[in-house]
Length: 315
Image (cartoon, rainbow, N blue to C red; front, side):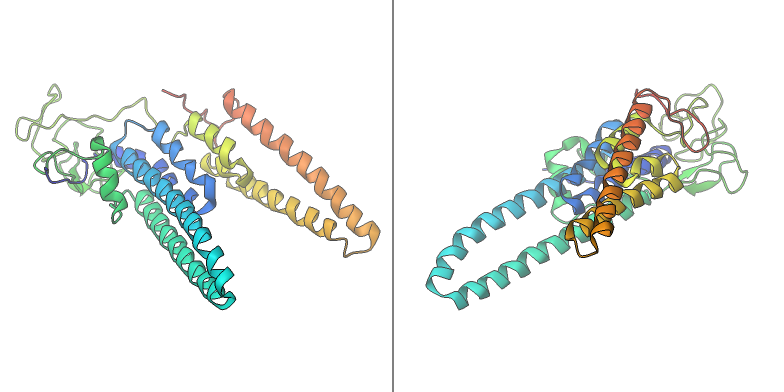
C-alpha cells in the first residue's frame, strides 16, 4: 500500500481554513456539541486544510461516543453480578471503572485541545491512531503517494520574490500581499510574466490574489449554524467580532440557571425566592427573544459584523 503523507495546502488556503478548522475539535468536550465539526466540514468543504481537520474531528467524536457507550454496556453487565457475589469486590470494580472512563475522557480532552490549537495555528496535525484511521477511511484527505506534491511550509512573494512562511498575510520585505502581483512564482521563486498561468520552472499553477474576496469577511452559513447549535454561548457573536454582546449573552444564559436554581431551593425568605424565580423567568423569555431575533437576522442577511459589513453568502 502506498505511503500516506499530509495533504498539500497553499498559504492562502491555510489562512482561510484556520478561521473555521479549529471548530472541528472543542465541541467534543461538551457532548453532542461535538457535532460542531459539521460547521467547517460543509462551510469550507473545498479547502484541504479545513477538510483534513474536520474529518479527523468527526472520527474523534465518533470514536469517543463508541468507546463510551461500549464501556458502560460492558461495565454494567460485569458490575451487577460482581456486586451480587461480593459488595467489596463491587466497590473495587466501580472505582476501577471510574478510573478507566476518567482516563478515556482526559485523553479525548487532550487530543481535542491539541487539535484545536494546531488548527487555529494553521498547522496540520495527525492524531495518533485517530489521524491514521481517518486518512485511510477518507482517501481524499491525503495524496495517494508520498511522491506527489509535498506540503510546503514556505512560499515566495509574487511581487519581490522574498521567501515567506506559507501562512504570511503580507510580505515583510515589500509590504504587499504575497499573491497580489505577477513577477515571481509563489512555489519556487522563479521569475514569471503577467500573462503566464503556469511556472515554467516547477510547473506550479500560478495563483493571484482574488480582489473580490475579503478573507476577513464572515460567512453567513457559519454564523447561522453557530447561532443554531451554540447560540446560548454567544459563539455566533464572537465569530462576527461582536465580543462584548457575545459575553453579555453568555452571562445572561448562566444567570438564568443561577436565579432559577436559587429560587427553586427556597432557602431564602418567601419574597426573595419568589423574586428570584420571577426574575429568572423574565430573563429566560428575554434571552429566547434575543436568540430568535439573532437567528432570523442572520438567516435573512440583516445582521452585519463588527465592521458593519454584510455576511458573505453561501456559495
